[in-house]
Length: 126
Image (cartoon, rainbow, N blue to C red; front, top):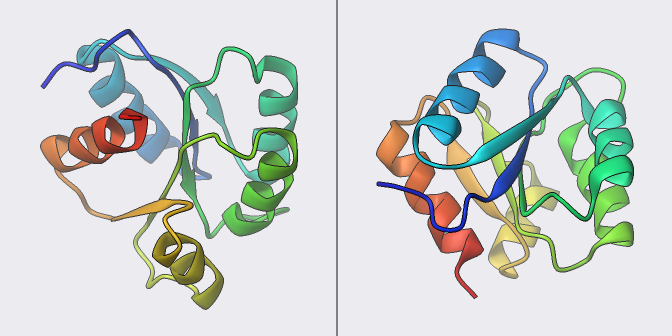
């Protein structure tokens, strides 16, 4: 399930193993990756490379700044950017609301490669 046009995806997760696994899934299927270790790092990386980033995969339970707070900051900079929340936890009411409005997608951990790539393709399809 190859990704079209080599999208650049920012992977935001405080778990190193999770970042590495998702990076391999994206890179092996034609994407390019950037990573961030928490919400603060995500906002900094995005501010620096916003023109390159096509989509963000964002955990929402992280130290320093959670994924929802980072999502709000990034939305101020680029409101139309596709964002997919990934988490092993139940969706918070705020995240559920954003997903319900169609502003974001949600993938529950653990997920299979095909499931994640399918959501990425859906998010990147205009």
